[in-house]
Length: 268
Image 1 (tube, helix red, strand yellow):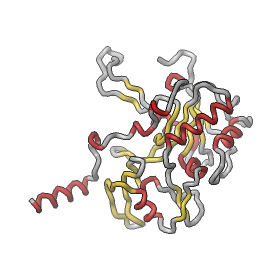
Image 2 (cartoon, helix red, strand yellow):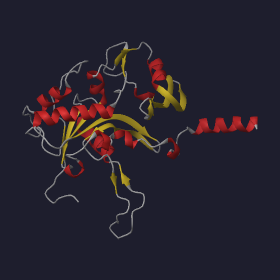
Image 3 (spheres, one colour):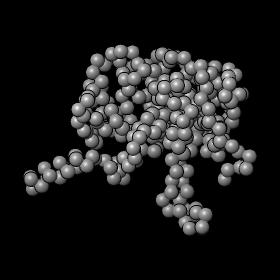
Image 4 (cartoon, helix red, strand yellow):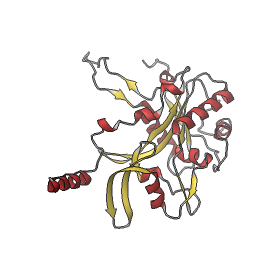
């Protein structure tokens, strides 16, 4: 239950410089949070806050900037499985693929924006581990016992137009709220409702960070009920949000499924 005096607040601090390989993200984030600015919540971090960080700056700090004259080749190298591919008149084909992290997204998460010419950004090798490392460092700097960290990336959705930010890494919080077994407002039992809390936080944070505002970090306050002081990496991070292949009803594009079935019928 949400306590009566608990209010949700989300803000994105300014002042984080261009991140380069080897930079200490905890230091950069701490400095940006401790400088008073207009429209910025004061006081650094508090118990139960959630720090949301874009995968782009995590990748840059971890040196995931690689030389790649051809982005398409980089996508191919990061691809484990092609889900769907469509040709485009104005550029290379659109590829929806499963990448090395098990995430299904366009272009395998390979990013060619805001990176030096002739290079691309790959996603962090282990976003959950990156989130856990950043969480530990921020907890020490601010003397906290409970803190959540989420690392985000942008993805499309099978049923909806537009893009949203999702959690690809998480530490220190419950990434899901399992409501199965509880009742709704009319007393009827809930049997399938599992809310993706980490994804909801990631999407909400993008509203204040923006895509072009140069604010790659947000702080979410007021969700302490989901943040766990005794969290341990074995409790699981954002990787637990990836649906197992056996439960994935959209593991193949419509055209790809048709072509495979047609070929199977001809060979039968």
